[in-house]
Image 1 (cartoon, rainbow over the protein chains, first blue to last red):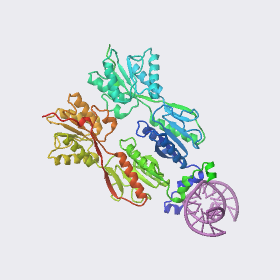
Image 2: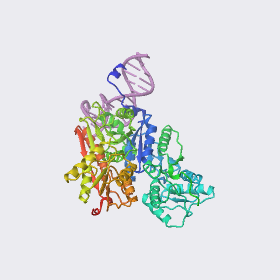
Image 3: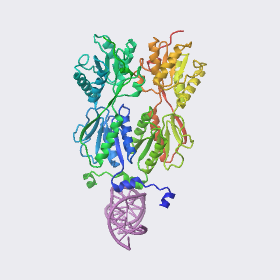
Length: 299
Length: 299
DNA sequence: CTGAAAGCGCTTACAG
DNA sequence: CTGAAAGCGCTTACAG
């Protein structure tokens, strides 16, 4: 021990791994790193693993399944103890298959194979809670300017919103969401359409903070007070948008860092032999700010 | 060979590493992952390594030097072949020291020890080129609404801007930059101050795209045409801001993905024994969009 | 309780 | 050219 101290000896983890069969490493394959969602999930996973002795290999597949296969082979040849696959949409994605020698957890985008382990944010609940928040603050005529209809997140949030409104004997303005794109531009365009229409609206629930940003810009430029005349709310709670808005934007935080932590937890369990098969939906939370405060003008 | 095929044998990379002394892994320690700059650098490095046989361990130190030391120990015990340390500011940072057993490359934030290897974006050139772009498009009265004065990026960009203007016998409006914060709010505030002042301005060069966003909002709401009356330009070229702006915002791309690639390249060289000591500044590029098109009104 | 041997999965150098 | 031995840095099980 004395000698070890003197030469500041540290055991070679590789050699340890060689005979324990465990390397203390996991691979994280992400669909697109520069997307909105991978980073907080990654941070959560890193946090959950990092306090232990697990290190993360990061691979960006750039939304390319060839690259994904390439990285998968590389990670397996490094004998990772498990894999986390992070998608960029909540739509189900192709399973990596059942003959991978280590456990795999799918995060954000669930696997299309029910035997796999998946953790996703609960977009239905997100929509439900957002609509509840607006109704509770006295709003009755709610328009939903949604994102891209091809995204399960759009459909799920809209379903939750509709369910919440129905439970109050309310319905969406125009009877259905206005689907479009995940951009400020779509928010601006849709709001211009709204203002040119006959619809009476006291709240606009937007599919994302970015859409909400475009909506707020047009409302403000049209002299409409937020929230006195129209409340505005987004989804995702990206502070770069919500805090920079005038007024600060209410939103739904999808708790992606918790999602990453849970993915890490489920992977550790699976490595230990305890697999929780199927898709697990994790709760999100409303973050109320000034854009939904105050009460609407009497109509 | 035949038998190997049949059981789909793949060599155990750990065992190979045990005797080659090389593990084919590098550690990437980032200051703050959710910051603006780490991700593209990381993607560039991943790209440069990924085509070879090098895998990246990702560690987020959360801007905490205790965490950084912890991750450093963990990575060294995994016998990484080298390290990339990514900072969140271009201010020099404390060196990890000279007695680390593997090469270290500092990216974005240079080491304060000249014996270390550092790659940084050339913020002086960025400022110079941005000002040149404005002058060439006919602007003469340029205000610089800068970011936080504590950031070397602010100081360097301002120096480049001043040098470019001086070379045309011009100077900044108000004779010096208006330093503030890296936020939309600061952009809005500074623009309101400008409008309440006596300054005649035909271009506003902003310390970041976010600041520019706030500037443009106030200009538009004040009925000032961009770019006909006032050109606006940012730095960083974050498309989430530059493309969503009205009109689309000209900016300077800091080429961070190339920076990441270069960091990877320098690390590979250093591992091979060829060390390029000191700080290397990498070029950035002007991305011209509508916010600086057209010519200013005659005054 | 201490000390030497066997073995994790490889590669390299040497013997046949 | 093929085949067995030695060794990378460890840990585990066994002998003394």
